[in-house]
Image 1 (cartoon, rainbow, N blue to C red):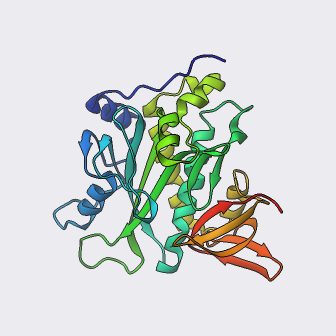
Image 2: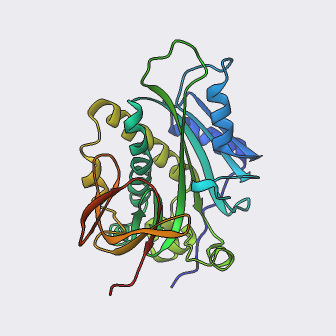
Length: 288
């Protein structure tokens, strides 16, 4: 097997310059050496009346001092070992449909990253509901979706700003697996097994995901979420698996994962019937 190849992170300004060329529809692109949280920075900017409304925005950082994952978790990162950025989008959807953007963001990111991998290995990159990206059985990337109202008066009732952040492991998978006590993957592992993935550069990875999010959110606003279950099914890591749904560390439901519905909820079937799950941590269990 060839030696792992880790994509190199350029210095912040060259990285931002590359992304401005690759993402001409984005109105503000910035990449910094370090910040507290890219999601937090964009949330604050969106709520600030003094900021211009024109979006999308993109903000990336080599290091996040207090990067956040789902459920308030801290995102462990090291400069150069993780690809971390957030985007802000205007969406026009009723509040009841906003939670569906979380699995949609995961599907779009997974689809974008699959295009950077050779056809023979693409199906090894999958999505675990609600929006984690896995390389086989190990987590490669996590996504955090947060929603706010823009800080400008007289907005339409269905106008929201969606902040989507992602952290992708470029290397350090072995150390992270040990410290977190669960299987972690990184892009260098994929690059060692796939020649197309070995040629992927970090700016192309960012641009592919940012464009996928923008296109998917625009399509959802225009056409709704009818195509989401079928898109999810193409990369579903849980399909047919016996799972436990946990809340606060306690099992609240168990059954077989059967994809998602048009609200982005996970469908779980057992002897009592089918239930749509909106929140919870998913644990795959051994089949009885």
